[in-house]
View 1: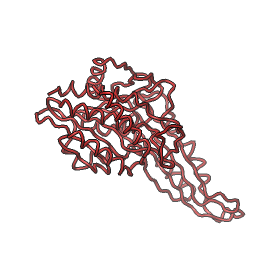
View 2 (view 1 turned 45 degrees about the horizontal axis):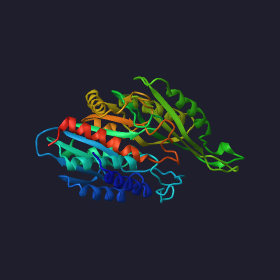
View 3 (view 1 turned 30 degrees about the vertical axis):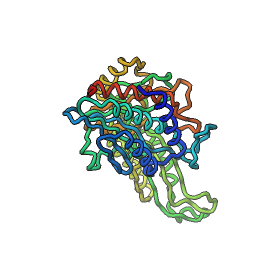
View 4 (view 1 turned 90 degrees about the vertical axis):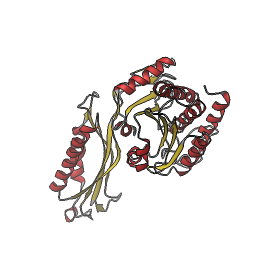
Amino acid sequence: MLTNLDLMELTEFRRELHRHPELSGEEVETASKIAAELKALSPTRILTGLGGHGVAAVFDSGKDGPTVLFRAELDALPIEERNDIAWSSLIHEKSHVCGHDGHMTMLLALGRMISRQPVAQGRVILMFQPAEEDGSGAKAVVADPAYQEIQADWAFAIHIEPGRPFGYVSTCAGLINCASLGLKIKLNGKTAHAADPEDGVSPAQAIAELIPALDALGQGGSLNDDFRLVTITHVKIGEPSFGVAPGDGKIFATLRTAGDAGMESLETAARTLANTAAEKFGLNVDFEVCDNFAASINNPDAYNVATTAMDAIDVAYGDAGVPMRASEDFGVFGWDAKAAMLCLGPGEDYAALHNPDYDFPDDLIPIGCAIFERIARDLLGTA
């Protein structure tokens, strides 16, 4: 059990992380702070630089058994915080309004418990993943040769999720977070004088046709296997001028599907529409893929392990609000492990994630730690 001193120290550390957020791929100081905290717990091994700035602590029992990974995220968001709190972000236009500071702290709390009472068999991995917010971090971590040395058999993560009662966990077997992909479509023609638009090649008509056509590819609806959603998030044509007919334009579209299998066909359909429009209006077209998230699928066995653990420690749970359309860069860990994501409620009326007035509630630290620890003990025992 965490002591009052533990909770005071962990809370202060969480708030220190909150003051100094770093964006995806920039988590140098955050990773350094995490590694220093982990060193004090005397794990068997600490790995750094995983998939960029990722950090992993290995607690190895020295006896055969499964490897159980628990994941948190290092990165913050490019959002200006608007909170009147003593630990508000000190970095302009960067903030932990994503909950990742709390997720990291829950993992460090778990590390304290495992350090004091080691597991009886197998290994516990505390994985602090970089670049979750842009969907690149998990893939980079699992592709890192060093990760192969700590390949997990089981993987678990907790993400705070406003809209749920305090301490309530939303989860389910199967799909929990959709796959998503950001597709940039860039159309290039030729500018002209606004008085003589026929001398140029404008993308205006192509974009006017593409917006409803892309939208029609995915209308959302029920989160079944056929779910597809296309959201136009940004459109630009030319420059803000009355004297120049535009020569280039761009559309940003976010594609969502209920699984990885459907994403390829949806992306192909979107690219085909853009290529057809470009050819029709004499334009060149380029594509760029961003924020590419795999679907998060809860393995039934991992789901059962998690719910059994929550039953044992009287944590309320259910399937309220899941699966979700929103994406999460955890699904990759489930490609080779039995994985489960748990969505922990801070209160039904709590500020939403990514809002400038969001802050992680520190009272959730012991709850998240207790869930993780019980999962670890159920799978690996106590020495």
